[in-house]
Image (tube, rainbow, N blue to C red; front, side, top):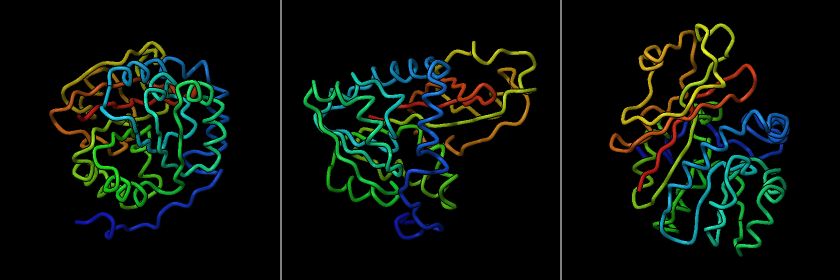
Length: 244
């Protein structure tokens, strides 16, 4: 199947108000800054261990880069951002502008759905590393054909080092965990994908949303699972992996 011709849904349209991002997302991140700090620390550690070759990086769904460390971004001289949120550049400059200017790094923005924008970019820039920034687990909210795209993505990225952190499972906290304290949960590494059986073995009950990303990373790739309390009542397990 060629995913560029078999889509079941039209490409989402860029804007400043979006279901999975936009101005409301920036307001939430700023309001929950302290709550999200442990997750930012986990992402910084994950990306700190990834050193792909080359001076360019393609970022998909980086938004304002709220969860990306400036030190990681500044090692690249050229950043190419594929983004649906037209307000993202303003907040990205607030977050990372000074550090990138000091490092001599520049950023270009491509506004559009990565399903359409990424394939030609990969063909034009062979070998350029790609980072998916918590976007692949949200694809089901944007497209009816998300399962086909997630299945096709690893082969599409052949020849490119890539990394992703993405929603694996999420839940509403109240009444879910048999007395466990979500904020104290720690990230863990695993050679196997996290699934509903593993969640039960870890002591979690209740209803969990599967974000459809269980088969995204190749079997040989080590996985890191990061706890993220996105709001006081909503908790996510985020899967992170690097493919070199």
